Image (cartoon, rainbow, N blue to C red; front, side, top):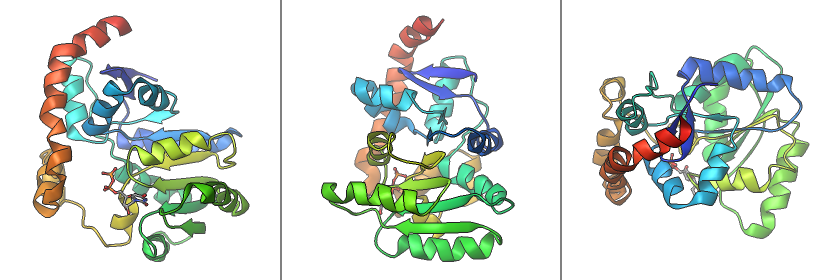
Length: 247
Ligand code: UDP
């Protein structure tokens, strides 16, 4: 698959629809496939942490969740055509899953969120099979039990919604024990499915201003968002080095 190297992270140049198709193809192969959707903050995290960069690069699908990553690809003259956000990919996957017998497990969020999300999703996607759910707050000694719960549910795919980088690290830590065919790390998506958090209106997403909408709604994100200008500057200054290594 065609990729662009953004500060050491090899992001797949796929559209949202292509990403969803790719995930559906994972069911044909009997092994775990990982799907991560880094935004610029997470790519900056990987830039400073080689082990985390390796973890991201080991993914079967790595998409650009955030307009910052799309702009970075333009700066590097290896364009990603659109943002492929985890939430949007998940919606398309749900639409396809409902036509199949594949089973879904929802993992993450505060107690009650996965249950609320399941209730809404079952209404929206008639035919969908949700085989289990679990909140995202646990002690280290409960992790094996959670893996067992997911495996025993017979799920084919799990949405892991613990926020980044926790979800990517959790999936990676348990990759040899998980029996699902696909594990997607998709951050706060369960909160949105549950109706607890509103997604930015389409117009903000289309204009690449979802970050601004989120900042107005959740001003405490300002610290995390200050990574964005640093990310842009780093791509301009250091990006070429990675590009040359790739070429
Ligand atoms: N969360 C969780 N366990 C934790 C920490 C966070 O399940 O130990 C959940 C939290 O309830 C929220 C999601 O992870 O639903 C993180 O959402 P956020 O939008 O902050 O993540 P992002 O999409 O920005 O990575």
